[in-house]
Length: 187
Image (cartoon, rainbow, N blue to C red; front, top):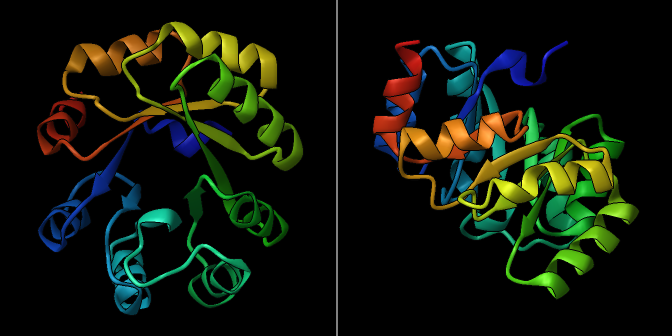
């Protein structure tokens, strides 16, 4: 099966207005950012009514720590299609519960890259989200080193950024830019 059913853009909702836009979009998978923990269940239920699969960015949920209790809450009570996090406990809990586990990797410098490799060797996520997304040259290197499919995100501002990432081997690109969503729904 193709990752995310071959959906190349993973649109990320930063607001309730964007979330509502995505409910009416052709995208099956959507990412929730910066929402209040108290709204998660309602938003996930609403998304499911529209046939959407929700990926929650655990590190950006307002009012939620990223400790083991939070991991249990997300995996047992909310049960999203996927969880994005920098935290190994979140990734390992998601994997154990059959939830898509997406480990965030920040490409700040060589030391950060090596530390990320070490963490990924321990967690073995389903996907790696590489940030910032405007360094497509490293996509093939990270994939070759880990064998884990790459999602690109962060600072993605143009169709060229998206296409460069996909051409370099990313399976999908996350973006909160609604104009990019629209340009990739038109085919």
